[in-house]
Image 1 (cartoon, one colour):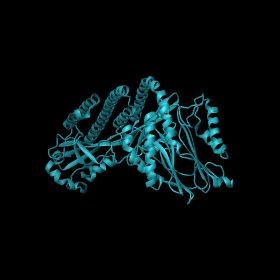
Image 2 (cartoon, rainbow, N blue to C red):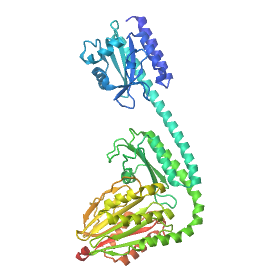
Image 3 (cartoon, rainbow, N blue to C red):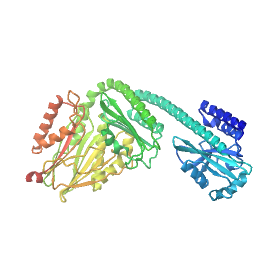
Image 4 (cartoon, rainbow, N blue to C red):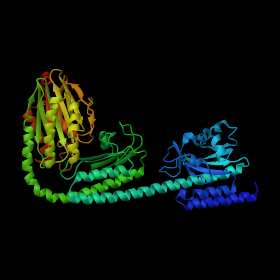
Amino acid sequence: MRVDDSIKKMKNLVDISTMITQSIDFFSIKDKVIEKMLEVVHPTKACINLFYDNCYEDAYLVCSQTLDVIPKLYDNNCKKVGTKIKFDDYSSYIHEAVNEKKIVYIQNIYEDKRALTEIPIAKKEGYIGRVVFPLVFNYNVIGFMTCFLDEDDFLSEEDIDFISSVTSLISLSIDITNKNNSTSILINKLRNAILSINEATKKLYFNKDISEFLNHLCKEACSITNSKESLILIEKFNYEKKMLSFYSEDKENQSNIYQIMEKIKNDSKEGYFSNNVSFENIDSLVYHKLNESNDVTGYIVCANSKNYTDDDLNILSILIKQIHVAMKLFKYNLEEINHKILANELELLNSQQKLLMDSSTIKHIKNKEINFYHKPAKVVGGDFYYSVRVDEENIIYIVADVMGHGMISNYVVAIIKGAFKVLSKVFKTPGEIMTNMNSMLYDEFDKMGVFTTSLIAMINSKTNEISISNSGHYNPIIIDKHKNIKRDLVIKKGVPIGVIENAKYETNVFTLDDILSIWMYTDGILEVRNDKKEEFGIDRFEEFILENLNSNYEDTVKNIEDRLREFSKKDTYEDDILAVMLKNLDVCEEI
């Protein structure tokens, strides 16, 4: 190779390097780069194909100004830059170059069996040889450059080294562009999301509709992280117990994000993402917790994006803080209003709640006794128990915990009771009743922005079995005849009623032969706090149950009240206390 040719190559390589380092957009300089390259090496033509989003199904022809025929053979009507070509349409040696990350030089396609399928195109385009240079960055192939040679063209080793240097610079330029685009897109998305949240916050302040606000944020979180579904769960806010919002792009193929909430709650990490998740219908997820005074008060979860990154985690961190700020403002606005209406509301609602539950007094069925203890909160909640005798052999009962307090939760309790009474006469298993209850109430709950967790249980005295269905509720505490808590019985949880329209619920069946007692409860008893802000919690509750296995109903109730008063130094609580106790008298007699 002559010295002046080498100097020209070096000069053009410097020019190409300068163009690339000074530009943040490969697509604006791509044609100039190819022109500079072809000034000092002499393939007849050259082009670049890119793979987008690590997808190797399609190769997009982005540099094609030197080609005459090939771009016209394919549909150019696509949203991404370039002409979309199925990668399978390319000859095997191009796959070899991409898969093995190596340069492949076909000097004569008419004599190389790897290229025989492209002879018709070669005749039209006017080339006999082809060299493929994979574009590699950070060990990933992001595309390939092809040089086409006619019968007078030849590439020396020095030429190939020069083109290889150019492809390395092109790969760098593409990476710079991708990062710049990703950053710009991220910033724009986040900016638009913040603006949208601010507008939603204003509406929240004036309309006082917290459900509409959370639904809006759910949709924004889904959009900004390119997720298919999202969920926001607020555990504690103002006088509300729980608030939940769920959004899905595909109403027909929704997953059950709620099923993973228990795992997320038990995770010590504040935020986390994974692109390899093994839950049913969930392939990937990202979540962030809302912390307030060392307590986790809420969660935002997104699922089923193609690829979550640290950026998505940072986005959720910002969104959850926006939620916190907005809800604080909302709380301050409501407090004055709540103080004015609270006194009038309490008397009315407490009397309504009492009427709804009074008909479910102690029930007996062949040596089985069901009792319940209910202490209404300072602000009326939605904890609810009701039982129905189906026939001489079966009693069925429900324990429910409706989101929130006040008029809406009281109304929801009333319609749950009505639906339960009707469905328990039509369907034979708790799972069927739960499934049809969700179907019956979904539209109404969706309009009101509410949901409820619940347990439905049926006792059959003939088979001596209990059947249980769970819609997002705490599983029962079950004590065997040896006075041990049984932790090996699996009761599968479904999503809360009112979250997914077509949700299905299972019936879990267990024998009562060795069961002494079963306790169903709502979270009010667990969340009673002492002056150190410690919760009563599940461990203390289980300890209390084991200590009172031999107590009668009246003593048990008195002991619950004494224990909670001793722990909290209070007589009233901000949440309902509800516990439903099933005692197996046959087993009691044995021990």
